[in-house]
Image 1 (cartoon, rainbow, N blue to C red):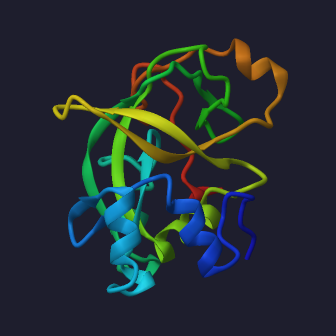
Image 2: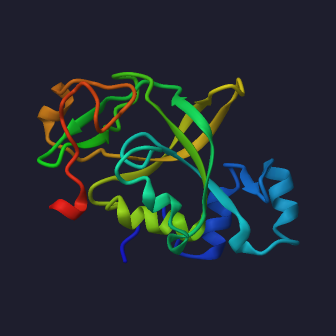
Length: 190
């Protein structure tokens, strides 16, 4: 099993990495100070990280079912949002996969969904997204719809892509059945 460089190699590394993020525990947002205190009283496995999904993992999209499968861990939809900075969201490759190019400042403010996921789901998503080869898991600031605030979330973007992808049309809200006409080819059909 491969994990990207942001992935955890030890529980202590996980704890230190997450200190700057804030966490969800038992459905409530914890500040960094509360998180530090709560770690004494709560098991490590109960912590949740935020992941922003913008493509086939969103509700109603072809791969959403993996977020619902408890065998992969826990994932809870926390809301919708948009990237604070614009990014190029392109549909590329022979399978018409949505890809967020790691070029902050270019493209559109990308819409998606925010999930709280446990460590097991985070590791599953790393593998599912081909991290670190196909995508890299990075932190991005998301403007949360209806809350008026921002949140640091992990996002699967790519810094490794053919140069011509930068010239593909940029999207702001992916839909596999969208007007772009580029139908996603599900994994089970490849």
